[in-house]
Structures are given as C-alpha cells and as structure tokens.
Length: 493
Image (cartoon, rainbow, N blue to C red; front, side, top):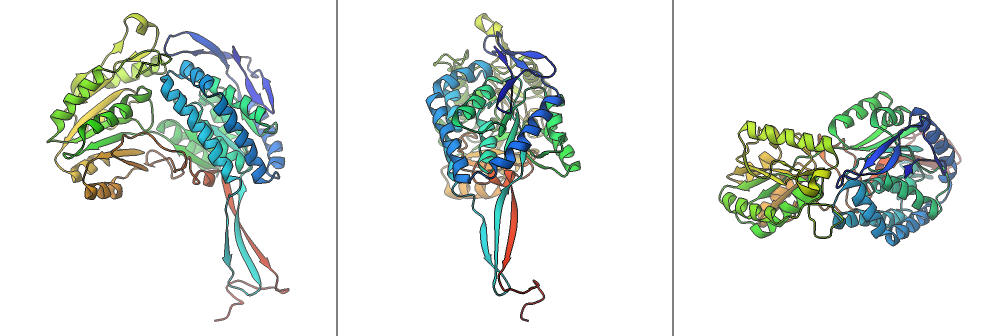
C-alpha cells in the first residue's frame, strides 16, 4: 500500500517520487509506504487551501458544523476498523486505540456544537447612538504538525476547531503513522467537506515541516512534539510574525501522600506510566512518595508490574505494547544506563526484550528506579518510554517543590484523602493539568489541554480555548448618530 498526499481533493504522488517504509512496531514488518514530499508539495497544498478558504469562510458556521457531525458519525461507525489500523502502525494496545478513536468522535461532536456558538461580545459604547461588538473571524490557512503517539486524536484536536471556525488546513502528520491521516482525509471527503479545505502532505520535519512553517500564506502553526523542535518552530514563527501554538514535552509526577489509598495509587501509576508504553506527553515518569509509605508503595508497584502482559497490542490480553521504533529503544536504554550511573537503584526492568516474538518488534521492559534524587537526569529529562523514577519526600510542601522543580509543566497528580492537601495542591502545583486521586493521563476533550513552562507557549488544544488559536478577534463600531463622534474626546466630562 502506497500512501499518497491528499491535495485539493485528490490523491497525488509526491513531487520527489520518493516513498519510505511504514513499520509495524510490534512485528518489524513493513505494512505500507509513505510519500516523502518536498517543498513544492507544500506550496501546492497551501495555494489550494488559500483559494478554498475564501469560500469556506462564507459558509455559515452551523453549516460548517454539519460536516463535523457527519465526520463524527463516520468515525463512530468505523471505530473498530480504525482502532486496529492504529494499533498496527503505532503499536498501542487495542483498548487504548479504541479510546483514541473515541477522542476523535467526541471532538467532532463537541466542535460541531461550536458552529452554533463561536461567541463574540457586545459591549456598551461610551458615545451616544453607537453600537460596539467583537466577533471571531478565521485566520485563513492553518498548518498543523502532529506526532506519532496519537496519530488521529491530536489531529482532530487541531483540525476540527480550525475547520468549524472557517479556516483551511494543511496537515503534516508524522511519517511513522500515515495510515490514520489517510483514513481521516477519506472521512472528511465522504462527509462532504469541499475540496481544498483539508490537505495532507507527508514527509519529514526538516523538509516538509519546515516548508509549512516558513510558507508566507500559512498564518498559524499548531505543533505537538518535542521541546527541541517546538523551540525552533517558535523562533521561525517569531521572525515571521506568525501565530504559533506549541504543545511539547512533560516530566509528569504522581504525588502519593501518607494517607493515600495505595491500591488506587498503584492503579493510577501503572496506567499513567506504562499505558502507551510510556509514550505520552502526559505519562507519569516520576513518583513522589511520602517516606512513611514509600516501602509499601514500592512493594505493591513491583507486584503490579510483574502481572503486566507485554506483546502485540492486537492481543486483547496485552497491557503494554512496543515502543515506536529502534531509535526510541536506544534512547530509552541510554537513559536507563544514565540512571544506573547516577546512583539510582533499579528495582525492575531496565532492558530490551529480545526473546521469541519480542525479537521482531521494539519492546522494552517496564522499568522502575528508586532512591532517585530530584537533580538526577532521569528525574528531570523526558525519556518518553516505560521508565519511572521514585523519589521520597517528608511533607506536602516538599512534594510540591519537587514536582515544580523541572522545566516542564504539563500534568501532575496527587493521591490523598485530606481535602486541605487537595486544595493546596490544586493551587500550588504549576502544571496546566492537575488530577486528584487519579493518574496523570485521562484528559477530556471539553477542557483545555496544555501546560506551562517548557511544555508550551500559553495556547491550549481542546475545549473552547482551542478556538483562540484558529481565530482572530475583530472589533466593530457602528455609529448611527449621523455625525462624526470621536471616542475619548466627544464624551461628557
């Protein structure tokens, strides 16, 4: 199967004529070939998007929303098919893949509802016989760049609000997971989205991503990915005076206080740390535990990890799938070696799985370190794999300080039965998302998603806040006095 670009309603070969293999991380098998495009393909898509957007913006927003309702229904009808394809190309277990497709369904219906809102404001004028209001207007052509770990969910977080707001979209998906991009384009087409409003251009970041970022007719870039790449995109967009929304990494912590329900805490940590094989920006990679319960928590975590079945995510009994590719395996293993060298104690895991069926895929054993200190690299840098560091504290204040000591600020969690501790944590944890008696993952699409510090630049995906990225505010003054009135001058003292 060759996966082509989708430009102006047509499937097209890349101008380069080049394709790259798409590998199933569970088996190492090539399951498709994906176009490796060039700047000319981006330019063709952007020019078509620019032309189509002018007409799309004139379609009433409730009518634009009807397309999203149909997209949601098609996603719902094909949920199982899409989930299985997602597991094959990305590796996450089938239960999680179904959950990811459900995020797309939820986002379609939620953002379709915004087609009858897209609220502005009316305000009193300081002058007599004058009306004042502000309205949202589309920005034009939007560029979105998405990662491989959520190949359909994150694309819907970005494209659905952009489209309902009246923009056209050019999407560069991750080359590791192009099948979901192909399926979403087909669904948009079947749902009746006019040609030119949605495009998919495949390729690598330095070539295709850079061309999208630097194209003068692309007015907004919405990026989810690494901190390193996000910073480079922000620099380029800053020079071009282009709006940019960044959602980058995380070094998320679960705080376990001495009064916590440890059974619940273990469930939350296991799900947050080893779901998606730790390849989530919201994954729990740090456990900050009160010294009084540290030993018991570690005992229970070890028991729980030993029960996790690792393997091909299409097996319904598997709980931990592979990581995405060989490079990811090598990075994870380097960090494990760093942790050992820094003096952390390895409790379990710490090695690649190579025997039997594991030899064909990219599997890493769920790994837990203890006796980790906050200044160690494994406690500060994003590993993006199934590796957890346990740190001991003596108080809530110390736990919050350790949580806040890293450069990231996406998600945090606290397990406690004390309502006073809960409210202090809600106030003092410096992350964009805070969970109470739950793990660090599980965001719902009607709340803003994003973080502080090195995690982002202040914008949010999901919720009504997502519309802020893809709209501009226009202020309108209507003077029906029949004469020139000057604000701040022709007012009564």
